Length: 65
Image 1 (cartoon, rainbow, N blue to C red):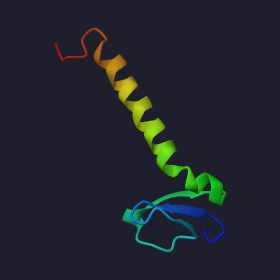
Image 2 (image 1 turned 90 degrees about the vertical axis):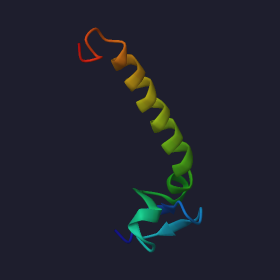
Image 3 (image 1 turned 135 degrees about the vertical axis):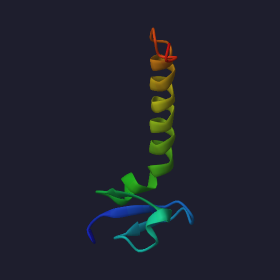
Image 4 (image 1 turned 180 degrees about the vertical axis):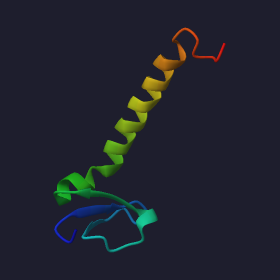
């Protein structure tokens, strides 16, 4: 894992290898540039998941009836 990069969500810094507590890390990423984009990637994924949930809630019978 030392060759991977992590984004520290507490400090906003990119780390080479897992240096901080797991709860503060996002990754691993192959490059420092990818790790630096972690907040953007997380926002994109959260939006995608929210859109998926909205679509699923519109399916017939999705309300449990």
